[in-house]
Length: 469
Ligand code: AMP
Ligand code: ZN
Image (cartoon, rainbow, N blue to C red; front, side, top):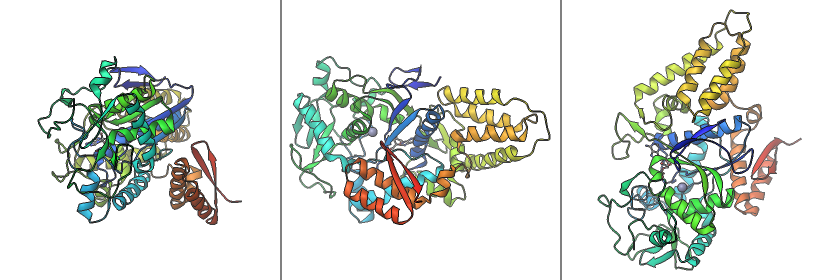
């Protein structure tokens, strides 16, 4: 039985999905304005471990991870969700290209990096800019319900009106700082400091970032929070099982998602289980671009390490505990990983066939206990050192542990081995387009893939690639 810490109830609970054997899960993905940091990757690792665990437990998993390519202001995560500079605009200025080019460049880098760190690709990476009409429809539902108001810089969700109707806002939040505006400029037109933008207008003189749409409220672009509600509900339904993000999202982004989704559909709870990962720190302190320590996966590789060394390092702490990164710790992780793998392949002399059952059960128990990776890794070490296990049993055990750990480079499935990466990438892109209803483009890509000798068969939201006969 899988047990998970649910931020909503602040308790460890037995996991059960809405629909037996099927899990619908959403992870708040990156804003694709730069390379993700190893902090961001720590949070995506939480999703990856969870997906691999659910699949090992034979759930049919649909995992959606959005790509934010519009609307995310730098102040969005820290209390007042409507202030600060626009991340895409800032990146456009930095690189001298428009926001669309920025999104293409970093979106491609992000999705292609999954293989570097042995992460399972989500079923879909929907982009905010491909779901403008869904976001407008959702805002319209809230407007029709009398839960929005318009001021000079945008359309806002009215939290006090929401509360007046008997709803509770901010159950997830453990921050008193929703109202703490010390770090941020005030928007004096808002009715309540907690109100957040659903649709933004370009202010007079504001630099435009080349991403703007017409809406019933005027030309502008969606606020950041609405995209996650619109896209998760489109692909997973009005209510679904699991939502994952970093701990900072507990303060405003996720409470906002809950408020606007439950207000629009009237269905409670919007999501059953909310999981939040603790932050990665660097050299004992905060990680930040201005501090020069916001390392990326590319920095890791440029220092002679692999994404899988980093993956191994992440497992040294439970996902709800802070983890410190230093280059020395990464070096230790690399040595430790190599040592573990060599122990697994070192032939034991024994011929006694000791049962492997207890190791397997203990490993699954550790994983099922709120994804206790340090403990699961400890059991893997114990097994690797066990002189009484035959080589065959060691191999069998490691293969099953490694379907979750994924700490070797050769853990690809036979199916993936035969499908080149550029084909898988194209097929993934085609699937995204198909699910977004962009059938012409999707068909063009399917034909190109066909010309390269591969067939795609769609299976619900997923697909399968096979070599053409
Ligand atoms: P952002 O692009 O800033 O919205 O971040 C994308 C995801 O990474 C969110 O789920 C954040 O909570 C998470 N995140 C940001 N910084 C860190 C960090 N230092 N450690 C772990 N997760 C982080
Ligand atoms: Zn989100």
